[in-house]
Length: 337
Ligand code: AHG
Ligand code: MN
Ligand code: MN
Image 1 (tube, rainbow, N blue to C red):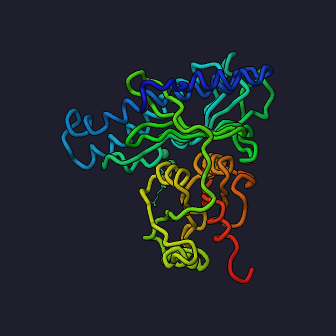
Image 2: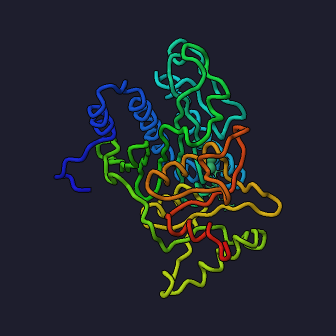
Image 3: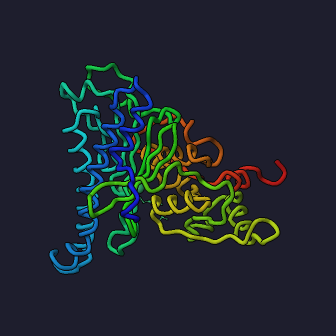
């Protein structure tokens, strides 16, 4: 990062944005700053994961590693909940790590107009192999009356109602990327000052891409349509926009972040035994779909726009297909349609 160039920090950026909207209350900006603070704390622990596991932990057994991985999941969850509970901008949280919603239910929280859904640590099976992981969050305006505790209904909203969504990627550097309807912006953590600095303003997903990301091991159990699309990707030639390249980390935040920047498509289809796939609608699919759409891409569950799906349960799963517009159109417009 150039030290001579003056870059905006996340706090400065959200304040600049606010200055353009004199009527804005600053509550969303405040909430994003709180999430940024939790992300920095999680980042510190994520960077120490190998150290704790190999040196300070109970020496290398598979079980201990398993518990350490679990610990980091829970650490991330607790950090986010504690920052949001002690802050003043969030009325409650829905998390992958908790069966039910967490209603803060105190005088200040009940006055807050937002609720947050989150996957505190995504791709956690990658922790013990030192590969990219992430944190995903979604912000909704509550539908329950202010001055009362938030309710389940506040969380079971369609994706079209998302106010802001983002992720933190703990990769070769740590970045926070978030979208509001106004755009997607990416901030890289500058460890020397401990601040997220605007490094990727106004992110756009290229209309055309050459990367496809899917768990090819599941190929035999995908539908005929998905298999046909994957075959078409594999056999793309220069004449029809190829050749394509296949990239799959198994960490959705990493896979989608790469495709958002370079152009590409990410698929997590249903299978014969799991028709709804693996990913969770409310805290994995919706936030990524929102970010991708704001960046100019598309996201569906194979038939419907992800953001229009009406949620029934906090932890419901959905197939997910998202990425560059023209690749998504290729997927959706099948020969003969
Ligand atoms: P989580 O760690 O929160 O449970 O999510 C992992 C998800 C996602 O990040 C990734 O795309 C997917 O699981 C990978 O699943 P497969 O191993 O089945 O491909
Ligand atoms: Mn996840
Ligand atoms: Mn997770």
